[in-house]
Length: 327
Ligand code: HEM
Image 1: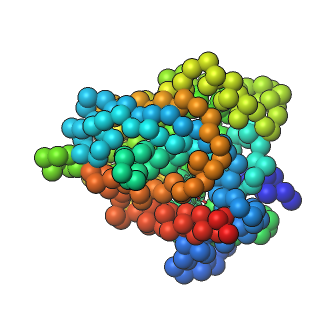
Image 2: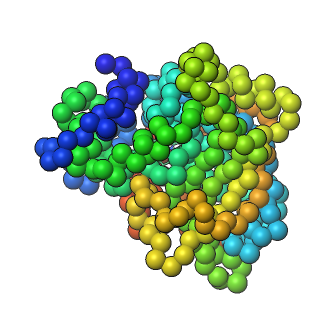
């Protein structure tokens, strides 16, 4: 069974979950290396490439903050326009992942250049939730899927209904026609601190100015497995691809420990405009490969959730993958 079809089978398998399935034995306290090994276990090792979000391309542009951004955070890019490097990608570690699959996230990673060698990163996906809420469950899911054993996979999802939410969300939304025509979410709850010390809880959302445009199943089939990069190149030749960066406002009692869960009524919450991300040019791969995009690389004035075990393990795991692909 190919990796693609293994993953493609997730939606169907999730739908077949039987209550009371056998538990899956998981390793205790997996390390960041274990997480990368688990990704390699499913997708194979691909020398010089990312262990996840392997297929993608690099771009450059700029970020222009809104007038309100500095009220939320004292981070330097919320007070002045800065250059950015951005990489669009498909989820999973398959370098040949098909662009026209519905059950996969699209990734959008941004590195804001703050000057003097300082950067702050934002690493987002085209779904408002993640598929695991602990490193153990991340490894457990990948090991179950990697085994190709349908019973093990069924048992995993029976024991972890929270891990079915992302797939359910993706399969109920159309395949994006372009990386430029889908929204992206930061998924985790971040705390912003402004110059006066005021703290605000929020989640990031990126809204495409081109609108949400999806493909019908027939259109997606006709597009084939490799159209996103050429489509983007053509689009960008006509003008910048712009996203509105927004903060979905948190409120008292909002949880930040479980990235498989959305906040109540998240889509209808008040938002604050943070600024505009303008993607202006295609860039060589090396521009995006020289430094990793790290969720935990955030400027003073922005803090990730201290109680979210997925957020905590991401940057160390990305560094394992980055170190390996440099060798
Ligand atoms: C335990 C949870 C996770 C693990 C272990 C993990 C692991 C990884 C790894 C190993 C990479 C490649 C890093 C590199 O070589 O530079 C990566 C890239 C990426 N991840 Fe994650 N990830 C996790 C959760 C998430 C979440 C929650 C999001 C989105 C909110 C996300 C979005 C991305 C994106 C967009 C990239 C591509 C970055 C780029 O273009 O360089 N990941 N992930």
